[in-house]
Structures are given as structure tokens and as C-alpha cells.
Amino acid sequence: MQGWSTGTTDLGTPSITINVDDVEITIELYENIMDFYIPVEALDLCKKNIDAYNTNIYYVAPECWMIFKARRGSGKDIAELSMLKYMVEEGTLSIDKSLIEKLLNFYEEDKHHIVDRLKSIKLM
Image 1 (cartoon, rainbow, N blue to C red):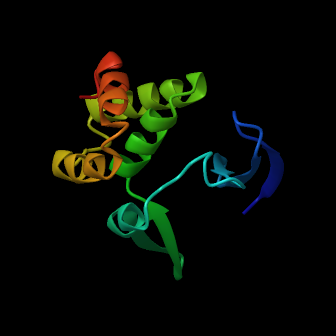
Image 2: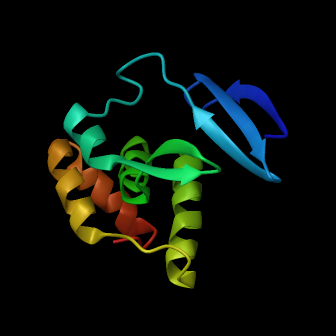
């Protein structure tokens, strides 16, 4: 790690940005469950891990991140989803559509809005 800074999310909650090998990674922290509620079952489905330099790192599957961002739907979220769309189109990232469908089932009330936002940027 080569450095870090603090900031805020679009919702005004804290965030931490770290720099790893000249790549900035922002971690958004939420202090109110209503800011970004994720059912435990969804977290279980979305939790992935990799071994990086003998350190086990847990992360959220890209498909889940996509649904979480589309659900929140801020301008910044939609811009980030556009970046994900570019990565899918370029072939640097593949998306598991069955995982997306499973996750959407946890958000029955918001499913229509999530799908509409993803369709608006041609991610579905």
C-alpha cells in the first residue's frame, strides 16, 4: 500500500481511498442501515475471496456490486456502472446473469427500478 485518504460518499457517509500499485480503491462506509441495506442472504451469495500476496481478501462479486449500485442509483453510481459496462464490452470482465437473477429476488420491491436503471445503460 502506498497511501490512503478519507472522504465522503454521495450520501455523505465516510469513505476511505487507498492506493495500491498506483490504483485507487475507494471503500464506502455506511452508518445507517437505510442508506444501503443488503440482506444477509445476499451477502452470503455475493461474498468472494482471493489470495493476494498471501493475504486472503474478501470482496463483493461484480454482479452484486452492479445490483447494489443500480439499486441506489445516484449519478455517480450510474457513471460507475457505465465503466463496468465498458469492461464487459471489452471482454475484461464477464458477468454471471444467473447470479444477477438470484440477487434480484432479494429486492422484489426495488426489482423494477434496478432493472430499469441497468437497461438504461444497456447492462441488461
